[in-house]
Length: 391
Image 1 (cartoon, rainbow, N blue to C red):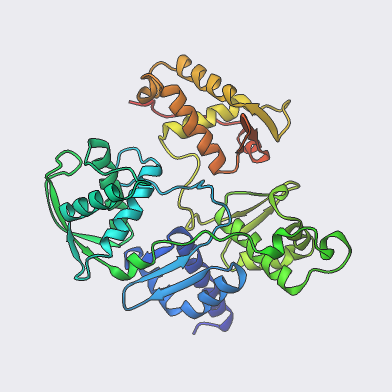
Image 2 (image 1 turned 90 degrees about the vertical axis):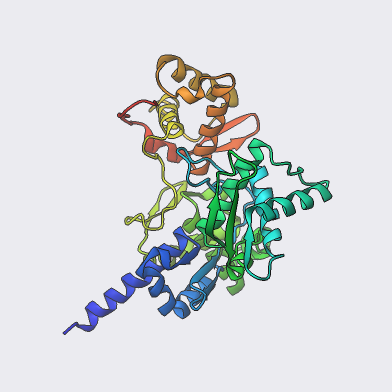
């Protein structure tokens, strides 16, 4: 017979597992296994938890076979962009792919019968982009076909469309075709609007901040949601990036914050200048640093070692040219490494990717004419890099 204590512990563990699964994949379905069934069974409690503590809406369509966590952000910067799938070296979506994704989604809404061919998508995308001066015209060039393939693969991955049949490789042959089923319910839910910060957190001149008055209930709720949102969605949250209201709430809300994070199975790490929510299970992790055998991450680690010494205090600013110089030195010192970046402009391209990678994980932040190396970079002062070089 299972005791009540063990049962309660098991229930809490299942609840935390559901949260972590939704954080990793906001569009969740049966492909993840039994955890989707747990989300369906616990949907009311999960909906209440996300709504109250983070301000995110959870929509569970059990009969349709998916759940959607509508994660809102207050930062328009895309530090963790959508990544290409099915490629040897995944790379982030660029502006053209995001634009194409939106156009393809609009086109898919035009097929109420729920089925469409690849060539029909291409045809209608070309018509829409030609009619709109704000969009680059789709003429099925090699680069545009590659972008179309990446968009359709991502839509397939999240279940918006399902491949029924295909003939040929569209990336190589503009006459290739495929047939897709459309899930109109998921199609409606793939986009989430940008949410500006609530006024109660951005108006730092309020009497409750300038004086000694306590925060209002509305301010406390807004601050709690904003801090939780960032801790769940960002690798590290620096204190100086928080509003005055949010910092004021943290003065007395640390215990509540730790309790809420314990619902997720996360551990709260508190430093003088930054806070971090750590998932020991890594079940909520959708991307990691460093990635195994990833040239960009190898370069970023080696740059961290060169720029991060005991004598140099953090945070500190470096000019943008300094990063390019260090990347150039790495390429010169290792002639058989990173061969894909050896062509003209390769060093600049690798530098840009390294910069984006460091910023995405809170190790640096962009500043005018350079980068500010953040305190979290200190974690990588002593790093041993081993393994095969780029082939």
